[in-house]
Image (cartoon, rainbow, N blue to C red; front, side, top):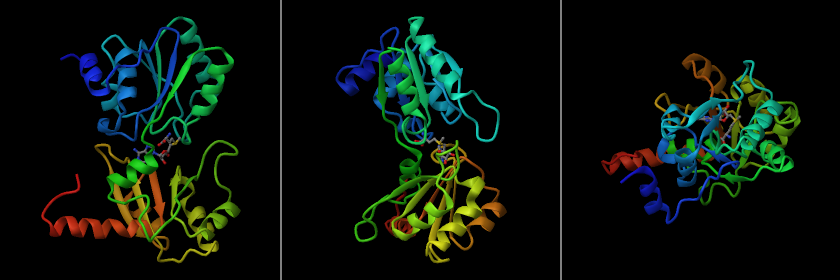
Length: 272
Ligand SMILES: C[S@@+](CC[C@H](N)C(=O)[O-])C[C@H]1O[C@@H](n2cnc3c(N)ncnc32)[C@H](O)[C@@H]1O
């Protein structure tokens, strides 16, 4: 069975990526098992896959043999393509009649500028689809055996950006307000400002013993998980040399991991 037949069986019918169209899709956090069938259909059909730095090489390897892979994205702290240039490139490729898959790590619309690219395509009259992906904030947690919600522990969950382009990161006074909600906070792009964020959360009333998990390169071959507390996390991240990309989860949900792993060990089985 070829790739297309397999997709048809799995999904019922494969959506057609037509010439001159763009699919803005999420690739998930890394593990190819977390790629949606629609994103996989896009990979199989695209003439050009325009991807960002966080798309795992194992996912890119799923592109069809004729597909041209084009890197276009932001690399934290390093010179990278301007957003307007990326949007213009997508429009140009579509106007040349290419089938374009714009593939972003995680979900394209979670701290991923998917909205800006969709708007640019809409304004240029280019037909497009938005295909959701497993965002790192959820994928990293579940893969680390930390449930995003636990009955009796939290009624909400907050996704926040610790760093980023002007206007997209949470300001110090806002961290204090988020801390006062007493709901877990899942922080993207937090590694560069971690000490400042921790201080602000403490000012907002979170206790030094509040559990924190740092999940770096989640669901990739180099995944690392650190379970710590607000008091210790900055020093432990430094001591262990943890680097971006990482998701930082703050709150009582983190403690569920130990309970779950203990239960799994007691039953003699495994999480993954
Ligand atoms: C520009 S944001 C993109 C988020 C992406 N659109 C998503 O939905 O996951 C980049 C940040 O996402 C997080 N991230 C993405 N992939 C990750 C992974 N595999 N493991 C841990 N964090 C990841 C990190 O916080 C990273 O700095």
